[in-house]
Length: 128
Figure (spheres, rainbow, N blue to C red):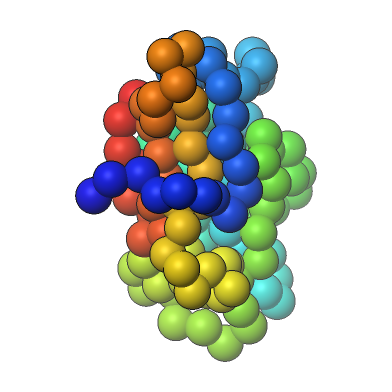
């Protein structure tokens, strides 16, 4: 699947995903949470790995997916209340319900102007 012409959260610039964000504390890039309760259902780690139902995260979660701190690079996004959240794709659909065009969630643009990493609408990470 190729990167899309547009994103939900933006395009960010750097030679790689790791270089695109200043992140010495290795916060998650983004998180999806179930409401009510703010149980973390998805974390996209500092290095772009997508985790379903993470037990803990590098950004100070209280374990078992319960948030105590929300430090992320791009933010923490609420999934629709009552949505089925059994798969990564279901979680991303519930967190970005206005994404009817199936745009990528975000992209990293390298020095040559090419998309070197993208997180697609299904929550699948591509590139490095």
